Image (cartoon, rainbow, N blue to C red; front, side, top):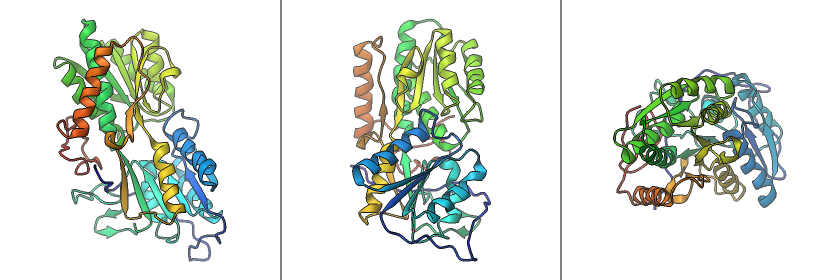
Length: 363
């Protein structure tokens, strides 16, 4: 059984809001948990919305008070986190890698508050802190109250890529599939690297196109990237771009080819969805809040979610997929869990060194 491990994020100067020159949290009474979205917002039908589900589940099952702060732009990150602390939050969960620099700065200002960061970790297992928000250019940031929530999205990307490869191979014709990423960050790239690698396991002659919209919100941008890939012969489009990626699913539906969802089960969001690569970020938020409420929060460490502990996986699969293909995909899943197949990760990934045998794969 793998144990949760650790790693890091990227440094950007941010504004820190301090009252009276010394930061302090509001007086505590009942336990309060807060969640701050990234720029994808809570209505993205995926990554942020699912973390909000985890927050609401904690409210229902653990009896905690909750605060949800939506970030409409990156300039909202610092004030949203600060306001959550002022409102009495005992734990503040930052909804993604893009918030890591802000968390790195503010955690030291509020040492009595627990913080989590989704899709990022606190220490680099390789010792390379060149892209770290917590260690940069010799400076070390306070991490004792930060816990990373890290997901093996390369593994779920692998499974959907393998299924896509099997379907395209059986269909004949052009052996081409595509992936549409949002912003080019390791959390996105890990999905795509796994997708490419395992599509090749299923169909060694397959060509995998990839492109980035540099956006997690505007659907038209992702739709345009997907349409370009479809014009090059792509038979499957994997969206890895949050709300923006819904445009890629729609482009696939319009072209009559397969689409693959991301993060949550997006089977019902468009026609012709083959399946979805799941990242159970709701579970991560709930587990961290449960830890903190019980006094067992583990700052300066990570929680790792992978196939082994059901932290990533595959969503609903189209009934058009042959049973033998699903059986083959599940056999590959078993080999990954057993450690006989090692799915590569992206350059700069927090998973490098966290997943036994993982190496950097081609992007």
